[in-house]
Amino acid sequence: MALSPVSSGSTVDAVLDQLQAQVSGGTWPVGRRIPAELDLAAQLGVSRPAVREAIRALSHVGVLEVRRGDGTYVRSSADPRPLLRRVSRASARDVFEVQLAYDVQAARLAARRRTDADLARLEELLRARDEATEPDAFGAADARFHLGVAEASRNPVLIEAMRFFIDRLHESMRAIRLDHEVPEAGPARHRAVLDAIAAGDPEAAASAAAAVVEPTLAVLESLLGDAGAPEEDA
Image (cartoon, rainbow, N blue to C red; front, side, top):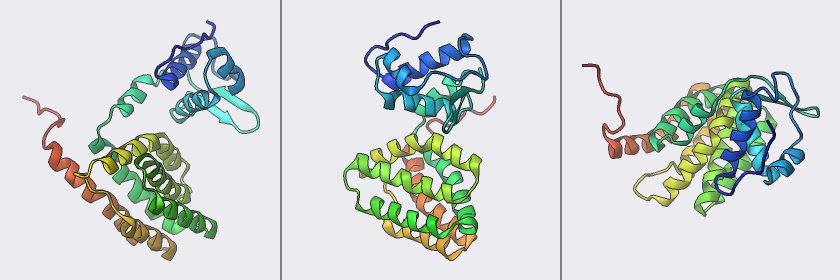
């Protein structure tokens, strides 16, 4: 099955579908190195960033494996598209419920394992978050700070989970900045997370991380009420 140029529209999704089709159809079996980004972009008629984003999504769910300096290899023939679509359609409440779990553990581990280099980077990320004003830039800066905390945890599974999730967090924070009905934790609460990590206090870091997410989640819960709650068995 040959790759073909994708039509205009949701480019990344279209690229992802074609890459997955090569894997599921057996054109690229498990263990095979796939063509380079530049070649894929040329065959599909899209930009390299679109190809890179699709490869990143498939890497995060275990279909592809990027080996630095070597290339990208097929790791699994499973089709993750139902999972990816479910994540893309998740509500803001869903996103913040997951973020609460990730952030609390990430902050706890970061307080135990962070290095001086981690602290310096987190300072830069927090400064960028505080200075961002435009909604999209703010959402991206907020997501990078939370990912930076996860990276300081030194837990590879948690880091990859956050990287997989980070685009949805970016989108949710952008929406919240545009919607004044839902509050977002300001600089002081994020500073408390970083201060606790710097102090090497895991429980204080975990509490501070929870205090960042819980107020926003509480408002989302009150706005949604019982909407979307699973039905009880009869």
